[in-house]
Length: 383
Ligand code: NZQ
Ligand code: ZN
Image (cartoon, rainbow, N blue to C red):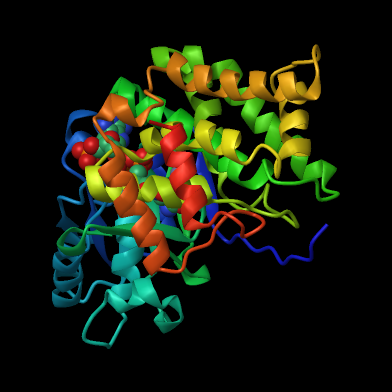
C-alpha cells in the first residue's frame, strides 16, 4: 500500500427535505451569491426551496452556468460577485454548476490579470470564497471533492483544476431532486460514477484489499440498481445512486492505491472538440482502454471479472474478454452509445487529440505508459 494523507472536510447533509437546512448552515451575516444552471431548478421546485430557506439572508443570483461550464461565463459571475462584495457562494445544480462555482471561488480572490492562469497553475490559488452546494444530479462527486473541470470556448480546451481549498463547506443532497432529471442525465451519471471507481480500482494489485472491496461494493451496487434508477420512481433507489456517486469520487476509495484517469483525460478532449456529454465520452473510451491496456491491467481485470461480474468459467483471457464485453453492455443497457462512429466522430478528431497529448507532453495511466500513440490505439479501437 502506498503512503497517503487523507482529509475531506465537506459536511454531507443527505435525505428528504434537507434543503431547508440551508438556513442554519450559512451564517446570516454573509452576502451569498447563489449560482445556477439553465433553469431546471425553477421547474422542479428546488429554486423555491432554496429561496425559502434563505429568506433572511442577503442573496444575489447568477444564472446560466452551462453544462461543461465555460471560463467565459464564469468571468461574468466573478465580476458580479466582486461588485456585490459576496463572501459566500452557494452552487445549486449539477456538477457543472458546482465546478463552475469552485472556479469562481478561487478567481474572486485572485489578484492576477488572467484568471485562466489558475487552471495552468493551481498553486496560484492561495484563498477562496467559502462555498456550499445543493446538488441535483448524482454523477461527478463534485459535491464532496475539491476538483473542478472548466472549459474555454475560445481555445476549445477543457482542463481540470484541483486545490484542497476547493472542498465545499457543506453539500445538501436531497434524492427527491433527481426525479426531474432527463433520462439521459441519469444514464450519464451512472456511467460517470462507475468509471470514477474504475479509474481508482482497475490498475494493478497494490495490497489494498479494503479499497478493492469498497470499490467493488460501489460497482456492484451501481450494476444492481441501474435498471430501477433509470425508472426514477423509487426514492431509496435514487438515494443509493446518489450516495454511490458521492462515494465514487470523494477520496474514500483512493487511499494508498494507484490511480489511472486516462479515460477521463481522453474523454475531456471528446467534449472539448464535440461537446459530447461527459459520462457519454467515458462509455466510449473505457471499454477500448481496457482492451488496449489488457496486459498492464491483467490481474485487476481478472479480479473485476470474478468479483463484480461473477465470471468464473473459462481461461483468464476469456474471463477478461467477457468482463470488457459486460462493461460495454452495461453502458448500452442504460441507453448510452459506446462508439465514436455513433457520434459521427472519426479519424480527424483522433489525430487532433493525439496531437494535443503530444504538445502537452501528456503520458498518462497508472504506470505513466499511455503515450500519445497508445491514445491513438485506444481511440481507433473505439471507432
Ligand atoms: O442547467 P440546468 O438547467 O440546471 O440543467 C442541467 C443540465 O442541463 C440538468 N439538470 C441538473 N439537475 C437536474 C437537471 N435537470 C432536471 N432535474 C434536475 N434535478 O442536467 C444537465 C447536465 O448538468 P451538468 O451539471 O452538466 O451534469 P454533471 O453533473 O454530469 O456535470 C458534468 C460536468 O462535471 C465535470 C464534467 O467534466 C462536466 O463538465 N466533472 C467534474 C468532476 C469533479 N468535479 O470532480 C469529475 C467528473 O469526472 C467530471 O469531469
Ligand atoms: Zn467523470
